[in-house]
Length: 301
Image (cartoon, rainbow, N blue to C red):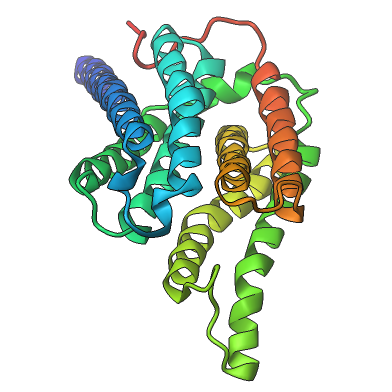
C-alpha cells in the first residue's frame, strides 16, 4: 500500500516537472518570437525608408511606382501595426496577438516577392534576412499560442461563418486569377505573363498559390467549424489581405501619377473593395474577443 502511494506521488511530481519544463519552453519561444518580430519591424522600416528615398536602388520595373507604393504602405501601415501589436501582445492582449501574427504574415508574404521576384539590389541581403526572420517569428509565435485560452475568449456572436465564406471566395478568385492563364497555356500554347513578363507571372502565381490560397482555405474551413485555429488564421489572413490590397491600390495611385495610367481601373476598384472587406473581417474577429485579460504563456507563472 505504501509503495502504491509513493508511486502516485512520484507520478504526480513527474507530471508537474514535465508541465514546468513545457511552460519554460513556451516562454522561451514567446520571448524569442517577440525579439525577432522587433527585428523584423526595424529591418522593414529601414528597407522601406531607403527604398522611398532612393527608388533607383530597385532595378527594372520595381524602380517606379511599384517599389514606392509597396515601401510606403509597409512603412506607414505594416511597421506601426507590427510594433503596436508586439507591445500589447507582450502585455497579454489577445487582440494584439491576432494583429501581431497578421502583421508578421504580411511581412513574410510581401518580402517573398522582394526575394524571388526582383533583380538583385544592394538591399538584397537585408531583404532576405527580413523575409527569413518574419517566417521564423511567425512559426515561433504560432507555436507558443495558448490556443485553448484564445478560443475561449471569443464571443459566440463572432460572425465566423460569414467571414469563412468571404475567405473562401477570396481563395477561389485568386486561384482563378492565376490558374486561368495556365489553362489557356495548355490549350493554346501561349505562355502566361504579367505586363509582358513571363517571370513575373511565375513568381506571383507561385507565391499566391503556395503561401496564400492554402491558408485561406484552411482558415475558412476551420472558421466555418468554429475551431480555435480558425479564429487565429482568419484574423491573420484578413489583416494580410487588408494591408496588401492597400499596397496594390497605392501602387495604382503612384503609377497614375508617374505614367498617366488610368486611376479608377477595375483593378484599383477591386483593391478598394478588398481593403474594406478585409478590414471588416479583421474588426469582426478582433472585436469578437471579449474583454477578459488573457494569461499567456509569456506571463504565466
